[in-house]
Image 1 (tube, rainbow over the protein chains, first blue to last red):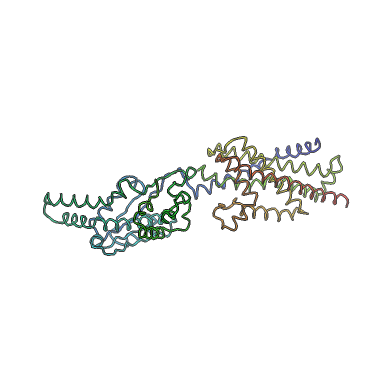
Image 2: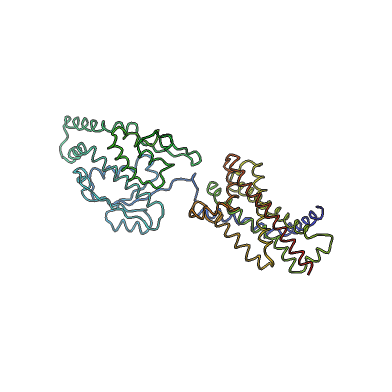
Length: 269
Length: 203
């Protein structure tokens, strides 16, 4: 043992006299990891959420698109979403090419009118190919917007039509007309009460380490024979189940058992 | 920054520190080739003692390099590596497995040139499969399956489990794997080296 330690001592003494190559090699993992982290990770999870820049070509310039214009100036959206309104496609493409925006969204002519008439509209989306993640965020946002507009037009179509006509008319609206509109709007909203007040779907952010699937989402926690949509929407088990599939399952459940619709849409308790 | 470093650094550390641990074992082959070894062995030193001293030096250098990296990353980037006692166990297991792995590689090599080819080959393949080069979770499923049996993966699992204050069971199994690898590797390496040196002595 003494001999081994003596040999070791001699070798380590030699290493101590020339440590630079070893120190340089020891620092390599740190240097490379920091480099990779700063290139791909930035500030990690604790950093600020990036601002999404979107070019909008509003060819409609009507009630609904006017409402959409005002949305990003409110709440958290004001911090994370910047809309650049352009006058024509060329201007929008130029912003995309310069990478000043993540996508160009074209709202079609007569979108509001067509929506209120129940006709199909097509919102065009041009993604910036030079960016990886943000255009996909915009795509998801536009899908949500289309879904929201369809639902709004379907459920509040009549009052919205009247409000639009009232705004467009040159005359000052009669109090009875305004009262009637308010009352019919409230009546329509009353149908949504069980879904919206309080909302059935909540959005929460939690640290990944603290994430626990909600009891309503866990397949094991579901009673026997409970609806398939609730199972499909479970974060723990949803691998490969796309939102349209979940919606299709929800529709099947609703047809089979009308009472099962509410739990099918419940993502959080 | 420390979050993302925690997923990148352990794998990179294990990979790069192995290159530091190579030097003592490379010296065995170098001493043999440059005829320094017969002179050392003419002193009252047996081949086993000589090889054990080199293995011990490899262990010490790997431990020091890992400790240095842990300390520097904690000071510079505020990384929290967890309970110091558990961390000490991880450092010992890491250094032991590195020594064992390198002892096997260099014990199998007959010349320094052979070791120069074999060592990077093995270390790179293990690093790729074990998640030292790419994020392990982005590997295809079948490679993840293979990667699960690499020391690099066990090393990453052990260190991240301690850093994230995971239950003891999650810390113990990777460390048991590393310690077993260290013991087996050192035993096999010692056997191969002493057999080589004894054969060289006879000639």
